[in-house]
Amino acid sequence: MRVRRLRAREFRTYARLDAELGAGLTVVHGRNGAGKTNLIEALYFGCTARSCRTSNEREVVRFGAAATHVDLDLEDVDGVAHTLSVGFQPGEPKRLKADGADVERLLDVTSRPLVSVFLPDRLELVKGPPALRRAHLDQVIAAAWPARAETRRIFGQAVAQRNALLSSIRAGRASRASLPAWDAEVARHGVVLRDHRAEACELLAEPFARAAADLGLAGEAAIRYRPRTHASSAEEFAAELAERVDGDLERGFTGHGPHRDEIVLARDGRELRVFGSQGEQRLGLLALLLAEREALADVRGALPLLLLDDVMSELDPVRRRKLAERLDGPGQSVITTTDLAHVPGAEAATVCRIAVRDGAALAEPADGAATEAA
Image (cartoon, rainbow, N blue to C red; front, side, top):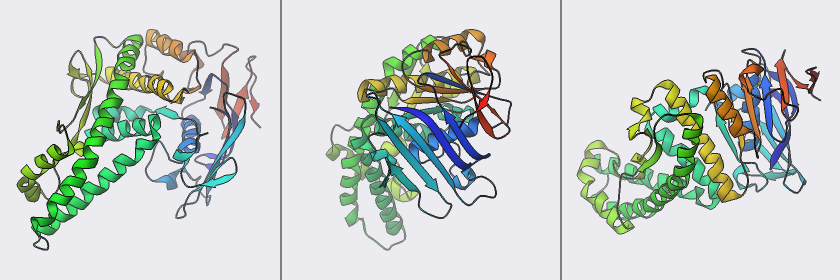
């Protein structure tokens, strides 16, 4: 599934955005502040109904406007056209449509393209707290095996209920008699979630090491799953929770389980989070996204749309070339840059180029003359 056309109204700095994407690589270029990242965000918003930049989605609505609307024209491998539509007005439920029909979640839409995004501030995924890596891995699981997406939500609800019971026991409003039931519920879903995460890390391990080597990350790169529990069964995990109940009561929350897991990105056995330079962390993040793209293609049979914002500016020429070689193949990708010279091969006739300036996206044919996309 590929995105043929993006249309948006009142999105960030765009009163109206209309851009056609190439089947392979699309390079979006323009000065700093022109709106390149906003275009990337609009694509992500249209694919997922979420922002990739902010948790306060009021920010995606253009200043002074009441609502925003994003439409994607899609095409599947057989050439059949599809559409996705996301309407958002702050304070109101999102209006989601697939092929003109209302849907509750885009996640359930089979024609929705999978999408992966690199933003400069996503380095927090490598060097930030474990919760970010857990949440990211769970998104990969949901993309690879949609039926498994519910496990994380149910586990989270079970932990929240157990935590609420712990608080009630501490306050003298409840007894410990109810704890074994919630121990069993947390353990039942926790073991499944842990196994899903372990399988996902195993799926990513080889492509991550290969992508890191291709990008020039020195040493042996590895992704490792570090679960909090190694219980062989839900009953064994429930027993571990019971053994730790005094400490949980003292803290007021459940301190043991998959909600405390870690996913480690390492080079030569040392964590990039702690021992990697910013450049190495950047390469590690890129390798992770490329590995996910390859792994999802293996599982789902289609390459996700890859969105790369300002990725070339901090790479040296050798690594720019290596990344460009990775993008010069099957699958659709969009990359932003302030300078076309930073993207090897950007001037090729097969590459779609979009110039962003003055609040408009301008299609740029092979001769370099820009015309406003319509």
